[in-house]
Length: 296
Image (cartoon, rainbow, N blue to C red; front, side, top):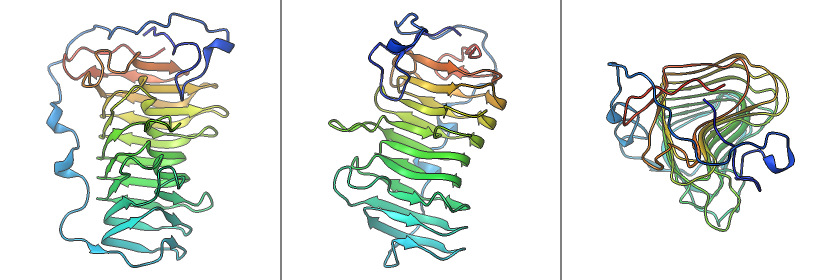
């Protein structure tokens, strides 16, 4: 599908084409037509409040806000704090509610995973940023998010590589006025992005920056990336892929793009495709069942 890039001057989070050679049409991209399929998921078949986040009574958390012991399990609690720092391997948060209590932009992320550790898992958690912080979860790699409810932050999950996000509801994602958050539902960081699995999530942005799923790879080949069976909408382009080198195993399949926020899915369109060797197919518009053409 041919699409235009963001306006010169750069929509935050997207490349600034004013300084490059790819000056192409900047008008909003129409949602492409295509064939319809009888196999069509309904809106309520995707993750929502009904099947994500913690369940049952939660005790107030009174433990350390820096987790330093490998294999720690924190469960069935509510953590009200500016930040939790994970500084150990194989830490699990299960059935936990995180509530941000800091000043606006006071902390880099609500849950910051030390780049030297791996094996951080969030299961059945809620992360409520209260529109006061730029990131819910941040780390270099080795992060798994399952059946979580993440909302009211700038970025839901921002991790470089070795990331799994499944069966989660990421919503009310926005850039707060007066900040430079460049909101994304899920964003990979810039280098050596690999082993990323984003499957069966609802990822919705309120505004027009930046993307529900933003795969950024400024150096190195993106490897072993799967984005499938998600409901996504909002942002500048709802799905943004910006990879300098050809991919080695990159599938974008069977996702549903909703027009809830914008008639064109995102402000400028559904896709921002700057990548090669991406296998795309079976992606549809939720409201019409029209199949989106693969990004080229």
